Image (cartoon, rainbow, N blue to C red; front, side, top):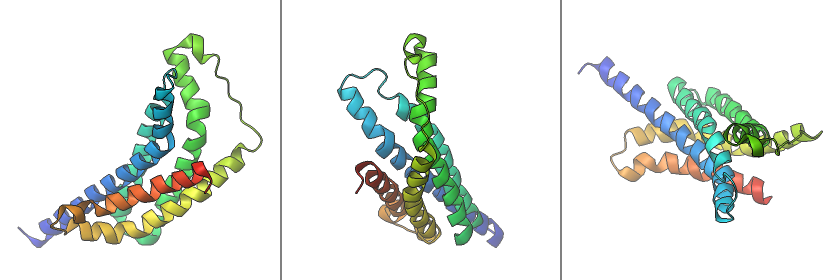
Amino acid sequence: LSLNSVELKIKRRKQAFGLFYGLAAGLAFSIALWGLDSYNQARAFAYFPWLKFAAGTPLILLIGGLAGWLTSRFEKPLLGIFIWAGAAAAFAWLTIIVPIVITPAALNLLEPDFGSLLRYSFYDNSSQMAAVAFGWIMIAAFIVAAIQIPMIEQAVFSTSLYGRIAPHLIGILLLSGMVALIIFGV
């Protein structure tokens, strides 16, 4: 193996780790935000209890995975912070849009008779709610971005299973913990 092929292999592995880092963080965010709510709705026999989770999760995974991959792709900490800031803005926007716009539209497609009953309107303070959500999510995204490159670097060369999954666990804890702060107002 030549030096260039080894470097290319390591770079690809870092990008794969970055992708999974972003996917893990995004999935944790989605589970904390919509998964727990969906679970409680299912226990209460709600109609289409998993719809919010099913509608929002693919979008969150796409954004989180892309942010993680791009950060690992460029390996520039400051750029990573800006990438994750963009992801935090998208997460905050989806926090508001999924339950108010996307879920009623999906319900209207699945059950046209019931979909027409859900007519949410945006309030004057919708942008302020998104800004508060962005502020809280940005705190976690900043930390996720700041630690991604050094943690992925260590994980790529780790020989232990824990060493390889540690960055993902930290991303999961940070974003799900931040959602808990938002929801419970701690």
